[in-house]
Amino acid sequence: MTAVPPPPAEPAAPMLASRDDEEIIASVVAGNTPSYSLESTLGDCLRAAAIRREALRRTTGRGLEGLPLEGFDYASILGQCCEMPVGYVQLPVGIAGPLILDGREYYVPMATTEGCLVASTNRGCKAIAACGGAASVVFRDAMTRAPAVRFPTAARAAELKFFLEEPDNFDTLCVVFNRSSRFARLQNIQCALAGRNLYIRFSCSTGDAMGMNMVSKGVQNVLDYLQNDFPDMDVISISGNFCSDKKPSAVNWIQGRGKSVVCEAVIMEDVVKKVLKTTVSALVELNTIKNLAGSAVAGSLGGFNAHASNLVSAIFIATGQDPAQNVESSHCITMMEAVNDGKDLHVSVTMPSIEVGTIGGGTQLASQSACLDLLGVKGSCVESPGANARLLATIVAGTVLAGELSLMSALAAGHLVRSHMKYNRSCKDVSEAAPSSIMTAKLADSEQ
Image 1 (cartoon, rainbow, N blue to C red):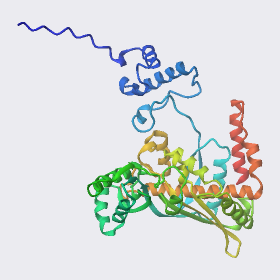
Image 2 (spheres, helix red, strand yellow):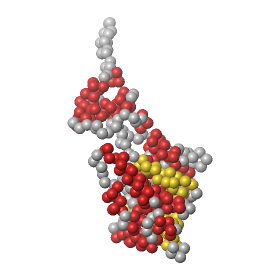
Image 3 (cartoon, one colour):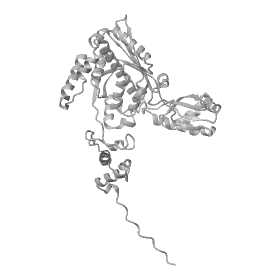
Image 4 (tube, rainbow, N blue to C red):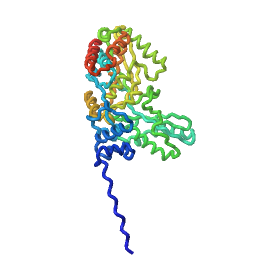
């Protein structure tokens, strides 16, 4: 019997990349081509962004004329920083400094749209420099991740708690955890029990990376290992919020997360008067009433400061940190005391959970990488892994110290509202932007 030949194959559909843009846009709008697949399908990240942008305009009826498209390396974010891009946002970057910290000078990049912030921080830097600089100490360095697991009974969950907290088991758990990376090193494990649910907080060093992915891999290794002896353990989530990431929490405020830093300086009486335009006694009183008592009245959690988050956010955005981690990274208590027979001011900021890295994530993008390079902390420190990230954390704390000094002085002298009303009013006419920037510079001069 003669075999029947198969029917001729249909001609293959033309590759999407070979089609013209108009045809691809129509396909995306119709839902036939997924927008998220354009980069991989076209092999051209800029073209993918442009097509996605036009498809969005036709779908919503709203344009994005003010959002730049050209001039950005979209390939640099593919698969790691941002999905389905349609452009990029421009933010001005100002420089405050020099910040004299631990005997070295730093010019600090700050990405912000708030007028007076850089100028005010610059004034704080000048006051610190005039008194010999600030000093800092990193007194803890540990990123955390806390999975949530569940057992059939609370008694069984408690068994795992006792097992994990038994010192004789720690060395074995370290070996299992540390397989995840050359730099991840388990430091301790803390457990919290809620009925038959167990929350396991792992703390580890992460080198120069901020370390969330690194610690998560180590945690997964340990969970897989524990499953052998605790087969009835149900892993609910790799993160059970006892970490705690991107949320204000007492555990981070008390025990720290990331880098815990204290930074201090003594500001002489004449500098307080001439540069900060106030007095030592006024600053000490204001700090007690506002930052300490006022925050207590508000029920603040880690917010015993004037505006630490202002400085943290500006540096985070400029250097490619995760801006959402500003939440816990801005935990700060500002202290001010009269010293040297009441003549001079001792000022300090204690920040227990600064979460920063100098490799990975947004730090590799060109603009952010340039800002890290300006600070001398770009990339990984080969000689001493983790040194660059720790240095960046101290720079953040030092800048917060400068910012706290200047804002508190403005409040004590009654200058805050006046300066913002004069120099921070929005300008409707774009052509007036240059004169406005000149006025801001004059503000900095007048404050100094």
